[in-house]
Length: 283
Figure 1 (cartoon, rainbow, N blue to C red):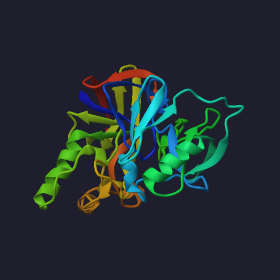
Figure 2: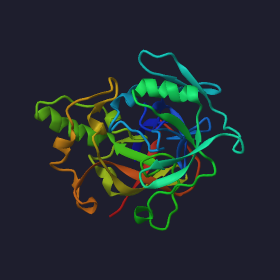
Figure 3: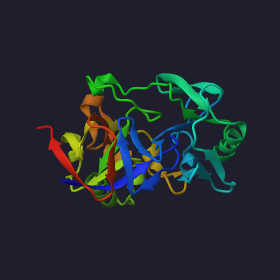
């Protein structure tokens, strides 16, 4: 058995997350209070998504769920509150937006919200929200016969990492005279304890109650783990340590940490920090 130690929902792609004690695990990812992981996204004038890769200060945009609004804070700025209720799909303005190779329809949030984000990030941009009529699926190359819906994530509905994997990396960083880093550098949705280091790579499925969560693709890493999520400032990149032992041949040598997962059995399971998770190895 593994133990679920952390649940983090990221309402806005590439902005700060919300640590939860419990949430609903759906086929499209984490959900709480009817709000889904990566339900919102920041885009440029052409509708292309912005991320911490180019704009590390996005880490400082901090969301908080309130009764009827998503409250946003950023250093030196007044709070912004966004209504949680979905707009009228027949009346609300929409944009064509792009997430990697996918183009889809999204709700366009208002000009006040666009101005707030433009000031917070330092470039002209807008906030958009996933449209209920839009459909986006994870790559069938990795999900096989399963249609796995996702919203504005990089590609998969759930990212999972093992606590021992970070311990292993931090041991190597310390031996190299570097500082240890927190798990939030890798921005997983779920963190599990009581696995061996990188054992998540070799799991056939995790049992969350009646739901089976299947790791399907190692998560290849970009520059974001170099960003200090508390300051929004890039620092030493842990990828130079990871590259010595975490290149994946099935991804042409890409440096990987964590596993992208999909739901293959069951749906809408309530999960909570501290619960035991069944582990079925793939061999």
